[in-house]
Image (cartoon, rainbow, N blue to C red):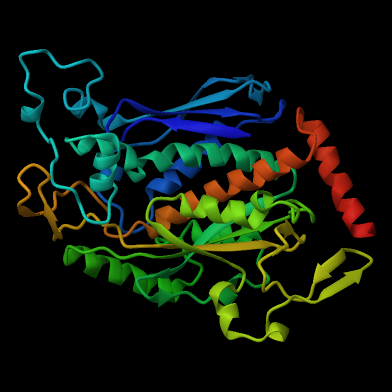
Length: 393
């Protein structure tokens, strides 16, 4: 499977075309729109989320609620476009209009953004041409894509959830996930302002976010994604570019402002002995092969073990500050305070939703690549056969 996205932050719409979905996959607009709403939520979000009400429109590839096997086209309209039609217009400017006089032209790159380097790469003197596409607004349509992937996964008995484990140095108790299913975790975090399992830590996070916003600053954090129900043997040890953990890491780091990724115990294993890291193998009549622990996060040798996959990503503080950092005007080369666009004081809860969906896409893609997947009934039967094979191996 593959997809492309198109659209700018203040353009008319965000568009994506998904290729390679099996036919006969049931599509629920309500579920997709529910996830889009979650991406807009979470404590610390800015004014843009009060303007947009993101909903998806399917304009191809689905008939009577099921995929056809042909490409699926999704559209999310930008409600704010009506205020930007002149600034972000598609048509060429009239000859008597000086582009430099158009409102909100940007020549002062913001530290931590793609502005300056993107302008260098594509030759843009108006840096709005860069920031409109590099904006995290693009993740809206990636969440829609991931929501479709989740619909595929849930038909295969594979379920996924993301939650916030840290904001601004305040850490949640990660052991609270122990013994809880994905459904149980979701029931808790969807009623929490920070999408966090730990109510006490969440309360402290809210206070810190409010203080940070008052001070004109931003904070980052850590999100964790958990996938249960994966059959063993998805991925490969044979080729470096087919290792599933490598693909999941790339997906996590493709999210705006994400700077690190880890699996299972992650970087902590550098401080432990081998006997404290590796998961011992056990077998019983009911479950077949399992592990007595899950320190490696459900992946060995680039392949799934059948244990829950656990992957975390770290998000830096958003670089758009209301007390702006120093920058340099690319026209005058004089120092200035960087320009300010609407922003969030903390987008970690929202980013957890994005992480859930980009990871869901990679998991679904890995399954579709490995098993015959023209039709959902065929894919279901193959996944069940793989589970039984792994149990009896």
